Image 1 (cartoon, protein in one colour):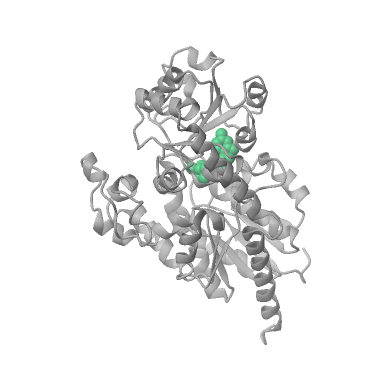
Image 2: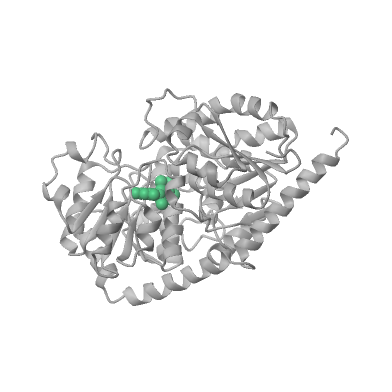
Length: 467
Ligand code: UDP
């Protein structure tokens, strides 16, 4: 690392959906001539499969680690994610502070994940500018700044009747006609005093102290929400969709099963539905079976990524009393972890049944594939609502997952009469996404501004009297 280059420390939350976009940003900043220290937790660093390949490709990125405060064998996905959220927010801060204070090459700024906001405090203590990177959509980020008001407006959603769930939520400016009570089932049922709700409220409050915000989104997709976020942050950089020029294996924490690409090669164009619930969410065995029967009954071939810890209270698919066909069927192909971006880019894939994690939505947008939205946790409901209702990129399963609804919605997407309209919207959005990262596109320009602003911070620090 050359001490004359501006030095940026990047700190992601230790989960797949956070590490991946922040690594992709790190790569772009490194290509722009900045020296990068990428701070993973020890546990994530061990899991980053192709870390060595990444290091070879990006010699300007230096990988460092801190402990996450949990024992090595503690589960960190599914319900275990809550322990990880709470643990990182307390255990990481002293180690992170020591790490930064010991750096001989002083950072020009710290880019910290919006849910690792202790780093904003550390930066302030050490006199270093902090920039927040929120891996959510702009819409969900804006919504999370209104959690306390949401709590007041919808105190207990869990027991509400379905009519009540359809009622519009009024307290998030700009989204009065979009968000319904049913878009907040998980968070709001926890109540304002639950540790996890307090966690999100604190994270949002601390994040406000950052001098700027980076988002993995693009102007055409979320312009109104980006402009609202500019009322909180002096600068907002929308730099997405962040894409790695190399294969996605280098940013994956799990081993990808590439064999499904050969299987896709043998399927007719547009015929296969790809199904994935991301890296954290879990399904009950009953829900899994409802999805399975709905998919089989739809008649479409499907490729389903069932990671070993997707199923609640089961060690793996192998230990469940599932029909033998589920393991052997040629029409329903199951893999543990798919090369998702390659899958979505494949001609044989005609749709994506998704849990609406933000990376998955953006990857689907990029590939121009229509979605069936079945959000499960966190901000996924908000993303699903945007994808289906605001952007017209797919259908909403409306939190239902009985087999007949799954079958009907899959048929509608794969062969229904509304398909052509959705395909026109997905093709147009894919074009806008690609235009945004081209030379002169909005995200490209925003990234250049971010680089220029970091270089300015560096120059300012170099010229300060204490240096
Ligand atoms: N992913 C993957 N293979 C899979 C399932 C998911 O590579 O079988 C990747 C996907 O491409 C995405 C990330 O894992 O980049 C999941 O992030 P997302 O924000 O969609 O959801 P999360 O896992 O955070 O809930």
